[in-house]
Image (cartoon, rainbow, N blue to C red):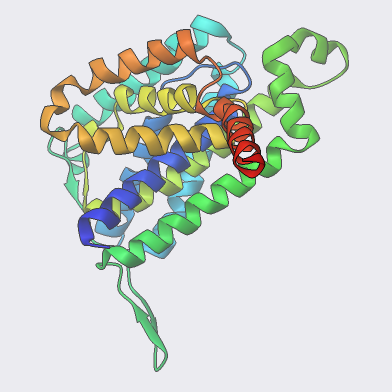
Length: 301
């Protein structure tokens, strides 16, 4: 693979990790558009710690995750008692508060221009190996590991009582409360987990692209993470994976006409809502059935 292809795979894995993490909140019936802002909190925290506190990336990474988790916990505690459009509008406002806070904040945050960062610190084991993350291939291995871990965790949650409760919240939260389930506790916990994941990915993003700019964490990016889920389907973890991969490839194909991308993505979203509301993941069974029929016919002939 050449460097461009590796870069595309890294972008794809970042989108998969973010889409899978935001799905954990979406399955509870809470539609929010500030996930990219938490990614930005992780990115800015990591960049500032490396640039001014002179921490290694490997120390800034857990610190960024911790700060983002704390932010998610506080914001979740305040906002997650809201539902529907109220929660949507609050998260939209939070995303704008983050953007305006960066743009109009201290010079240390870089405003619209952003701030430069250094590459991920190399891993050096004297006499054994040196892993230099200025090479894209090692960055690919790292984000592959992170994304794979996110997918495994999300899948495990889905297959447990905890995952069933999260899905039940969207269907009938009043019934769950009547059975003694602390709805607020589950909502806040899953929101904090997703924010932590966003912070980790944001920290990597900052030191992979070597710049942190507020436009990389705007509301549109959060909306795209939701679109990935709708296109792929919320029924399983495979949904956001399929959605993120297919739309990241489409994003790459649309680069010559990137100004029309929001319109095209919007049309695709409407099309899926009308024609395939369950998303791409629901095509698995029909495709398998079709393949089985073709195989049987060929065997008979």
